[in-house]
Image 1 (cartoon, rainbow, N blue to C red):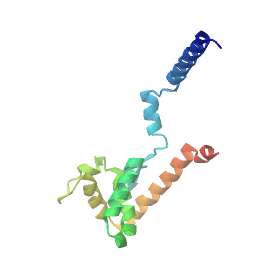
Image 2 (spheres, rainbow, N blue to C red; image 1 turned 90 degrees about the horizontal axis):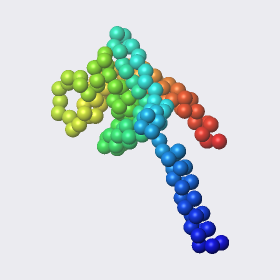
Image 3 (cartoon, rainbow, N blue to C red; image 1 turned 30 degrees about the horizontal axis):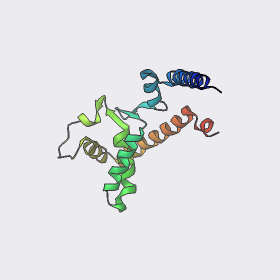
Image 4 (tube, one colour; image 1 turned 180 degrees about the horizontal axis):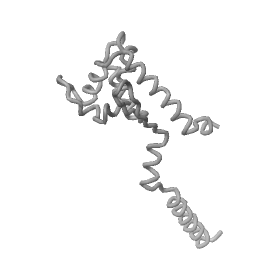
Amino acid sequence: MSKVSASLNREENQKNNNIESENKKISMKSLKDLIFLGRIERSVEINGFLFKLTTLSVQEQKDVVFKLIKIPEENRIFNAKVISLAFAVKSINLTPLDQIDVDGNFEDLNDKKINIMQELQVSVINKLYKIYEEMITESEYEVNIEEIKK
């Protein structure tokens, strides 16, 4: 193969790679769709209070784990539901959880949300967590995880 022919083949391969690269680029709309793929949002009323919940992103799940790690080991299991719900519950009666007025000095807004959830009755926490678990199952079904594994 001559140097000219090899050079032309390289240029053509580069051109084909550029075209493939352009075709594979993801648009902002597609990126947003991907980010929210599998996200489930649900509003549920419990005795006149409207709770808006969503499934968690990877970052929110990491934040849950970091909050749990800070808690003494003997309290982690008990607080797992509360902390998870502090991230999953986005609002109560249309008021964002982090904007509910409560007394206290909090390290960050997440601690404030955790504090709010800790003040709820166990029966409310259990009901909300049951709904949250159902949402996770629905999300996995929506994404069709079994198809991906094949």
